[in-house]
Structures are given as C-alpha cells and as structure tokens.
Amino acid sequence: MHDSQTPSTGTPSAESSSMKYGEREIQEGQLITFPNPRPGRRYEIRVTLPEFTCKCPFSGYPDFATIHLLYVPDETVVELKALKLYVNGYRDRYISHEESANQILDDFVAACDPLEVTLRADFLPRGNVHTEIEIRHVKDGQGT
Image 1: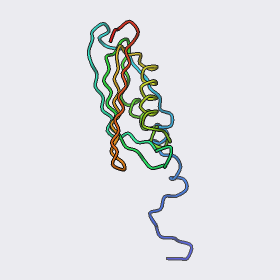
Image 2 (image 1 turned 180 degrees about the vertical axis):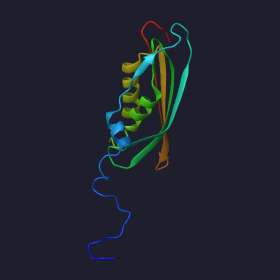
Image 3 (image 1 turned 90 degrees about the vertical axis):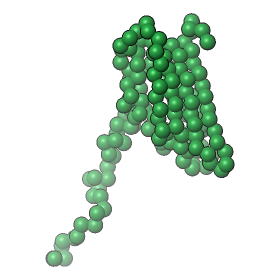
Image 4 (image 1 turned 90 degrees about the horizontal axis):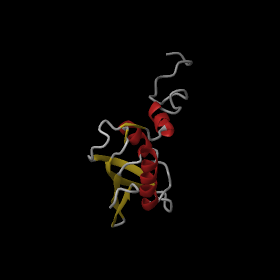
C-alpha cells in the first residue's frame, strides 16, 4: 500500500453523512387524508403507534410512549404512512407529555375532521412516574 492510499475505516464520508432519506421524509411529513370509502357508515379505526419519542422540555431526557388513536371517520381517513412520519417528527422536539398529546390531537382533527376521536398517550415510566394522557374530541352536532 502506498502512503497516498488509506484503508477503509467504515466511517461515512461527508457525502453520505448528509440528511438521510428517512430524515428528509420525517422533516417534510404532514398529515394527509384520502376519501372515506364508506361515508355515512359509522365504523371505528384503531391505530397504535408504539415508537413515539420526544424530549423532556426541562431535562432534555428522551420520553417514550405508545400513542393509541381511535376514531370514527367522516368524509376522510388519515393516510397511515403520513401519520407515522408526522408522529416521528416529535423525536427531537422538547415538549411535555400533555402538550405533545394535545398537539397531535389538534393536528389530527384539523387534517381529518373525524366524527369522534380519542387519543391516548401512554408514556413509559421515568423516575418511578407513569403518565397517560387521554383526550377526546367529538365533532359538533355528533353528541357525546
């Protein structure tokens, strides 16, 4: 081997250390919907997102949760890959348990306008404290 040659170190080059395609998709992610295939029929859609992460706004420590979403669609249904990318966008945000759950619900309602939706954020215990946030939204005129 000549001095001008360097063995492969397995370290990524500057070119490959730029933003990865998944990071780009997460950064650009937004909730999108498609037409409900059965408008007028009441049915429930349950979605579980078991890998939610965000950061504590006080300590910076990571928080981990499972997000449970149960909704009755009206005119539109949320696209699942878009929902996944949207939720993954929280991983580097400094945000409380309460605010993250409420913001996800607000954004979901704004995008999808369901008849009813319940969101439950079940956070893993940290420091001997287990937190669950549950929020319900009912579309005006749909009762409780």
